[in-house]
Image (cartoon, rainbow, N blue to C red):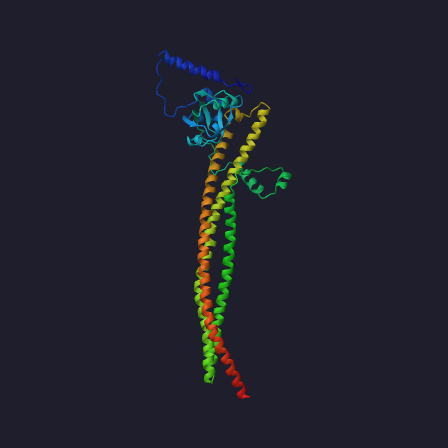
Length: 419
């Protein structure tokens, strides 16, 4: 058959293989043992794979046995195939049994139940899969390493630009995006429980920010009360020293001691409230920022994944247009490696994103549990300290009120006597 006007030579490949087999049958001299890194693709097939042919030929063919998924579905989305591409490859994997054997997006599928897929169209390959029993054999060749390298720290320029485009698009309204003609990627699976955790995390941060603010104001006010009570008690004691009348002196001293007692009670409360404030600050300044770092890593992994999805979408659209015209780009004619590299990178980015989502969910769950326990503990300490202050202050206030009333009466009598 012909691939866009050029012979793909599968017949020549098969003929060469038949001649080789016939020579072996007739007792031809045995060939020298092959080197460990001998190519697994015939030279004619290597040429069809362009500049990646040699790297692809060094990848060994793996034979595995897999089971179909739910509803007797194979769970494989395929790409390539004649007459557009010299090979058939996986574009999406929706079967855990297939993922478990190491097949990734972009890997070439060479045989199904012993049937070679080279030269077959996608429809023929799909028919082969549909006719397979529940458990069937599958041969595939791993995609060679990308020449430019992969990883979140070394994103291709096109993916990096799409990442920042996605980041800006998420802040725009749908109406503005339509006016500008910008499309963005979105996650189909929305985990409501995970979203509720993120919203609760934002509320928790606001709660602790408010707690730190109000508790700090309370501590400052308590220090001011403490200083004023001490000074006021000192004033009454100084007056009692200078007072000549013994009755007034004892009463003034008692009032001064009452104010000093208020100050000492406030000081004890201060020593109990300050650890509570430090606990709130630790949660706000260390625990929450640590969770925010995990959230930032999750957001970055999500943007990376969505950026790869955008690139896969854009490349797929170009292929669809070419298919409608019954044409193909040079990269499609030579194994479509750039697209397959992007598919594999997209799958790996998805795995990183899913792991980051799990990590963030666990951290937010632990943080929420710790928040509930710590908040209850610190607020109980705070209320208990306030209760003790109230009881002690109430006792001192009752005595001071009686003494102060007597002091006023004595002062009035002294004034009347002077007049």
